[in-house]
Length: 229
Image (cartoon, rainbow, N blue to C red; front, top):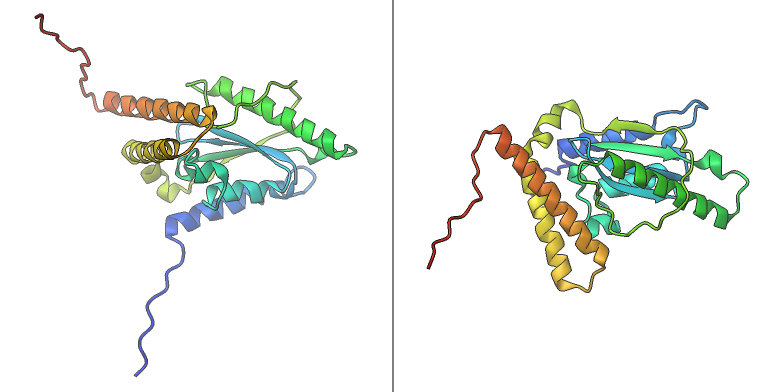
């Protein structure tokens, strides 16, 4: 008698729903009728559930491909090194740049892309409560450019938004990310930037934990009484 095959499960429903939202976002068409995800050159920024910017990047391969690799947990340096936790990303903003690249050589395109990334980087730093994002590499100062129109949207469906946004869930995720990042740092010869990222992650955890304590009206007294000898 043949053995009954085990039931095969696909992606968890929440993961599948988020991937569908990402795909829907990149299917948005601009004024020319072109899907924004099809642009080869662009800058992207990720925001958490408080609207706090957390990461900025650039691509010269395709916006939808590069961003999706970050957020679907496929191997990217930021995810692999525990710099970026895809679970934290609630909103995406992208700046397609193909129109600005027309007629430029390879070197000029790379230079313009770096300038655009630096411009967005400075923009989100100004919006950040902490004045910091999780990028490991220190961005060299460059002359700013006038950015193209951006597209920004939540990627978390309403059906799971409240559960994902719950501060206790996010505190647990941040604490785990910090522990994993600290382990990486303890085991390897890492850059100064990775240590700065660890500090930023710690500040993000402290801020969220402090907010949670305040909203629950928990009294915290850090003063210590020292006995005189």
